[in-house]
Length: 578
Image 1 (cartoon, rainbow, N blue to C red):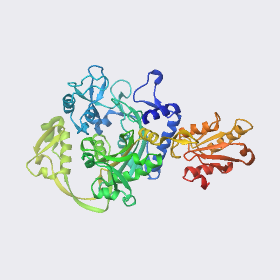
Image 2 (cartoon, helix red, strand yellow):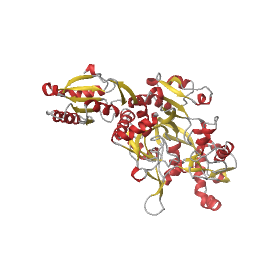
Image 3 (cartoon, rainbow, N blue to C red):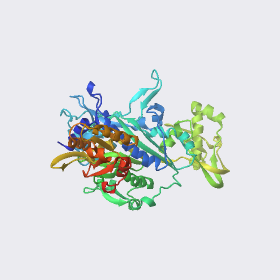
Image 4 (cartoon, rainbow, N blue to C red):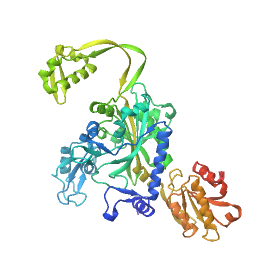
């Protein structure tokens, strides 16, 4: 069996994850996390929350998953959140057209940046066939398909909305209130773990490409002029980088740079992005990612989102393929600036000067008795456009006439009718639109990567053993308790031990079915790091056997000391140190 099929079998049999709604034929791209998977997922989220919320001193919010259309009009998702599709005329199957091109044309690796017409030409030129039935796709139209799930908020269709395709907008849209909780002081971070939805064209590969998934996102709001990340503590952290230049080179590959080297060489363009690349390494190691199968890959120009100047993905290797698990983007002021333009709220922070300053400000006081009759319904918009133009380019008013743009239209009027003037003012500060640094983690893909990377076989007592070498911090069960036999009071004593460990806050499994070796194997297979066996010696001296999963070593521990001993083991102690 392949690595992928081995894991799929384990995931379903042991309750990590399985296709949803199978009783009704299943639904592509939707999965249910079983008891083991739900616990593993929660524990990975807890590690993320510990590192990126608690330890970093950031805030956490929970926003709605149904969002009004106006939010996505402002954010750009209505226009840009599209994939290119081509439909087979024979079988009706729909495919990602840019992916077909990338798979068929060796020198094309960023077809997502191409126009649909060019993609259609490449499909025809290379006589690409439908992956489902083999029919030719040449001549078939390539269309853009918006990935958001649409809905209506309330009865009727007057209030259209969408299931959110990312959790970020739920943070950005609430910025005017969130900045108050941060005392209007930059920098500050707002985190969120929650569900997002994308109507994927071709869901595939279990949890890798799905239609409903969990994101863990941090939006770090910074003053672009004054706020800098603490690079010194991470300057010597080594990053496995697969930069854009290396991707274009025939023999390019991952290269190791320290954070300082990457910044000095211009490989990573943003100090903030470099900082979060370094900070995140500890998180990946904590949850069990194999760092020999991990890299950071820079987006090529054609891949960049509409809001990002530079983006890096954390990728894990799964069965020979590299899969994105996290995106690190410097979003500049795009999101807050766009919401500031559309919404009736202030998306800036007031930056207080150390001392008041006397500054020159360009102002306008349009003659509305002229603008109204001349421009009609557009008069107010022309007035706002004049204010904006004066603030950013006062030289535009140097001539006799000035032209402003309102949407796709332009309007020209005499400067004397604008009331343009340059005035001296004493100001105590200024309004700043923060920039945003965003690490965005795909929780499901992290779960899948950890399972793949930690799933393996070895030999114990002459027999092959399948195990999940999960870190104790994220394992679904921390300790399993067994009675050696279900008689002579051993099972009752084991039940008491299990209850005491649960009362101490540990995740405990109790198992008294089958022989002791079989019980060990079951727990090894689901990643339980420690097993406790209650035997006849327990009835004599109140000690139990503690077995460690990876080494299979054992030691005796007093029952009274057991909760503390398990805590120390989870914290990194060895059996010999108990």
